[in-house]
Image (tube, rainbow, N blue to C red; front, top):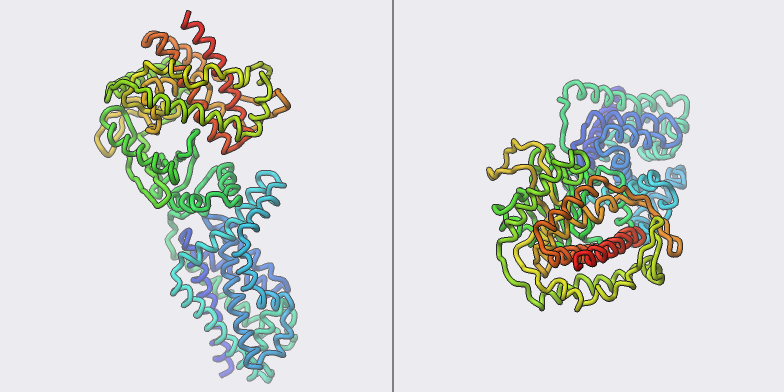
Length: 637
């Protein structure tokens, strides 16, 4: 009879462990498929160490062991274990609370360490305080993390992020009925096991109750507070179920088919720098609705690279569940409305010029997003230019310009003074006001008549009032014609195709390239805007400026490291010759002035993103204006 009772206590202890593994797997399943034999190994090892040693080192080992096997690694493992322990603390606290009310367990509660009492009494109020003060806690964590180098900063922010978001996701998205059932199964099994073991000990002549079991298990001293004469029973009672669980995990390891399965990343970014940038924004409490939408949009993909340019719409290279790559574009609020118009533009002009195939589009309450098919072995034109022979790059650009010329023949019309004035006011006057007032660095630099950029003296914007006023610009743009245009024809918005044997969804023939990211919000729909956008790359070196990460500013001296592209220099010379062949001098002057406006348009975005690094683009604007003054004087001779 005694043996039967003891074996039953072992059986129900094993059942409790199995229910616990199932519940832990349920928590993990929010982000990835749980592999139960890995979880059994982690729990078995952790519980064994907690049993043998007087401190809960086993929970740390459990986190490490599971994290090594989880696709989302150690931080996610920590978040799930915290969630698991949190529920157990509350459950055990409720059991002790019941014992106090019943007056049966007060004596035994005195044996529980003070830190357990603290947890039992304060865990729920502390939880509510954390929720209420979450905003300030995030700012505090961000400030502390910023003290360290980028690697440590990323780790601290990421772990804290998971403690906030993953735990919240877990409790929002799990099957709550199943979670309650498994929790009930855990503690029903454990309590039955404790009762049977207490009864077994009574049969052995020991004055044991279930409260004795509780007090010893939760005393924090594990086997060290057990009397020696009954210690063997405790060792078998606690370690035999764990040994059986370990054997069970080995059986599962042999029988269960190993497979690669899709998993949801706790954060979609792969690049650590992009991940850190996201976390800094999250901990700054900025654009919370947009952050939630961003995570929802990208919840089922891996972000391979963020290739966003100068606007508020972002472009990503993403990998979907089946391993295929797509270009994903998204924007929020008013910028989402603009992106919706971009989708409409692509669908309207799909048969006119080479454009991406939109495979999926979605509109939410505060966002718009669409996915573009990756057409074969494609490469951004920037990389193409800097890896392929110059002749091939120029041939593609010439063919692209021929396609754009076909587009420019659609919807031909005269410009009008009202649109020209609105264009100048919004794109020049308003942007100049932002540049000169909202950037503290540029505001200080504009106190000087000229500044020195990497040793070269450049006049500041204050010297160009004459050419940047409405009347002068109207005289430059007055003879522009209007048509359908791309609106954002930078080098990076031309995608080169290395493999022409492409199978696509619509049977459309693609040659060596296609265009992405048209801009419909130009007001002044002159074809010259497209030609000026190419100048932004070839003349302005825009893509290389995007890679500048440090700048030194001392009074009127500015220094930063930037690559000068020989390929861009040679292509610019060819492109300038091309413009001189195709257009009159007046038209070329208009094209170059539109380039100035393109730089004025992008600067407010740069100031908002990083005020100090925006100075890099400000100095390029000054260089562009100085160059164009020389070109204008030469063409007017």
